[in-house]
Length: 348
Image (cartoon, rainbow, N blue to C red; front, side, top):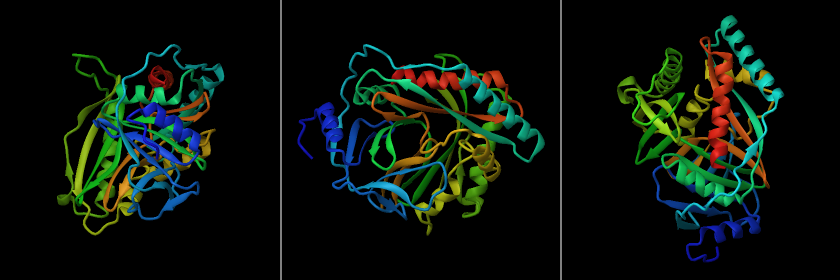
């Protein structure tokens, strides 16, 4: 790769012109932008998650995941944000609201009539961006210091940008970490969050699922579980429980398969919620609520692909979702999905 004398924007333009698969990312609380570019245009797949590179996997289970191989090509200091002249715009149509509201009502009906306890429903929304995507990426990096922020470009998947607060699996020196993240409130400075029973029970469902899944591999005594904590992501707050356990003789792929997709992005029970999503969502989730991150030999950092958008030139397709339970209020769910859309648009 060419020497750009720490000019990230020049490097990004070069990567786009080269038209080879590449990814740029900043790890949570990190202070550098890491660039990884593939040397050839073909699509490569990981079967083990032990290869060196960066993986990008969809919501639906597939056995092989696309990855960009190799170690980091370049690193950059995080450049300052540039002044944005025109924010991204989106037009929410009446039809968007009708479709999503209908989906929430269907979810509540399924919860009342079947063993389904919770299901995560999603929608997508078009938007227009008026600035270079590299500038949007840098703004995401500054806005979400505690998130995994990435821009992924690949001929097989299209281009994606996102900032996610949710770890799927972190493995380092034989120790695995994951989290149960659910419930959403607006962040308010110096004010204690007022979590409802709906949000607390939603988070408990995710936490119980992870604990039960891990116990299919390990005895309970080997799995550390934290108290429930508040986790901030930009102007939103979530409830979070941390888990820690040994890798032992398992492969990273074995553990990933028992965790993904979690109830935080699918529902409870997971298999029934996936069936509901397949039957009732009117769009393909594609890589939204999939997972991505840097991988290596028994060291990896995988994140759930939330708060993301697909990028085609100046057109953005934003993906947002919400967990529906028996206590969900249809109107509130619509407003929460709007809030999540605006949170992303305010930065992009």
